[in-house]
Image (cartoon, rainbow, N blue to C red; front, side):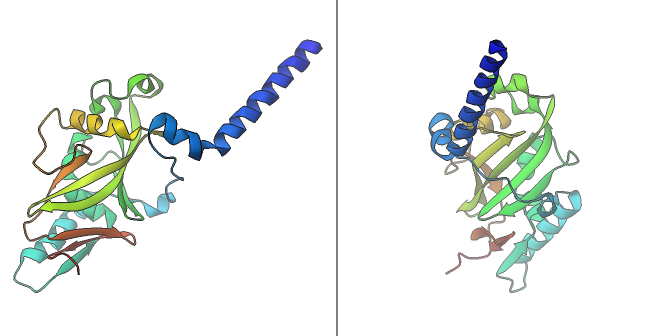
Length: 219
């Protein structure tokens, strides 16, 4: 009887510790893992499938900036933007057709896809890799900015594999593995994915559920 009571007491203590850890995670999580706790990302209905059709529409919209018309800016749906500006990253993660989806949340553009874990390369996931299946949902979120005419960058500020948030210090290494060691263009940050854009593009703005691409920098 006393043994059962001791076990019950231990379970109560463990539950109390777990509850305290959950309630204070905003304080301890960044100190341990070097990244922040983020709330659950929007409902599934806010995510759009990234298809070849969406990418084609996105390219068509951007082409309007370089045409003879007086178009100063175009507004893309998340799937259209991801299909164009993150085309190289999608191919590195396994290509379209693997439940690739996109969303805009605040000032960040998000991509998530079911990918083979081995495509992430090396031992960048460390001990976490042993807890994962052969395929997992990988989520990347970041901001977009123009580096110079013809070149922009997607600065990755959040990475999740399944429900595990990776430390921010791991991001440059992860992206290097995805590039298979290829050098970055001058001016692109180590935690960013280079993005080729028409030289006419002057600025990119992510907000209000869309990605706006401008011919000139907005004043």
